[in-house]
Length: 287
Length: 312
Image 1: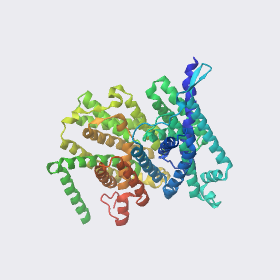
Image 2: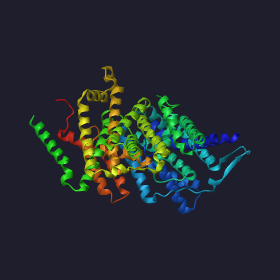
Image 3: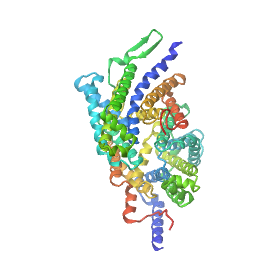
Image 4: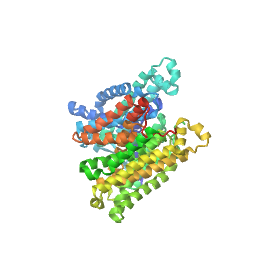
């Protein structure tokens, strides 16, 4: 009887992972009103970085974050400084297309360097399941994903609320010209924000790499998941992103249970399209 | 007036050269030009949406997939004549566009882009789970083997020239005026009695129809269709590249862009893996240094247009 709860529980846990996949996209939209189509590629790049450190140093995947986070932060900072800051204030299209071009470049560079083979960040966690009072089973890796996701979002929330940089970021998101007048260096704030968004991509890249196999082309798939999360929850809303992750995770796994495993992605997309139609700004989004 | 006549004569001579091409050119040149026409067609339809109607669609591949699969299914399973299959591919694309238009037009800007992309992805997954079209294994369009190269060439030529003429006439019609008014100031134009929804819907349906037709001819040439390729984002990547390079919001842009794209593709095909990296880099550099594309920059510098859409 209670085994039917399994997809629901696992959906919630997977939702935690999806939320952290979506958070970077949501942040950039909230701050700059722009959409970074290369977010998925940044994530998969982080997975490959982690793979390199595992092979070089023999580390546990979760420990590679100490290398991957700084690497992605610097990359995000540089991308914003060198590419995206140059098209600020020119509307939505140039940003969309530059990030699109970037995603094509990253994807094919990964393909050249790492071949199209499936990779994964191997841990002992992947085969373990947790038996909850004999009622249902939960894969341990999903618990790790959920914990990682919640931790990342929690830290980000505190960072945005408590630190000077966090306040500067929120100020420039709320009122650009007022924050400029208050002496905030917008381009620098944007670069740092993109660095932070890249760190969230790094976190999701490592978690996804531990949970699933990944290819150089996987970025697109996770970009769509990130969109799903952000659209269901509402662009730029932190709690909304978390809610969006949960809804997408649950709808995928419950859909797969009810219709068939081939329809896991499809049922997620359907929920997404329904939300887009009924409430285009997302469940918790502002107009 | 004289410059108009010269322009007309040049265009006519050029068309005659293109029409007689299969008689004197090598098979390779014919096959390259054929691709140029088809990409030009699909790209000018994307341009009609993104450049003139403000609808950035990342889901044009849904019409490519629908057009291709209509051709495959009808010609293989039912033996319907190829010509009719391609036409029906366009018609079914329009039906799909009408079905999704209600929800999709409630989305604005980025949401529209993502919404169209997700619909295309959802279609790709549905087709790969559909036994009737042999799941993800794809279909071989055997009836297309019987066609000669020049038949496909002429079909592509008609589409290519037709789509440019269509866009040109559309932009010079009342619809074109309305689109320009919406682009300049959407609220003011609506107050003046322009029906924004109907204008954009018209463009969306036209682009669905022509893209569906182009897809049919494209798959006559490719012969093999597979869901993740047909409904893949790769198509829109190519169209976007073509339009950005050529010039967004210009009639000639997609023509020049398609020529550059297909030639680059032929030239770079030896360097597998690098070709898309180079395309991505060119896109980014174009946005930095010539944000209006080659044609747009040319217009600015020399004030010369091959297809002026303003009324004199």
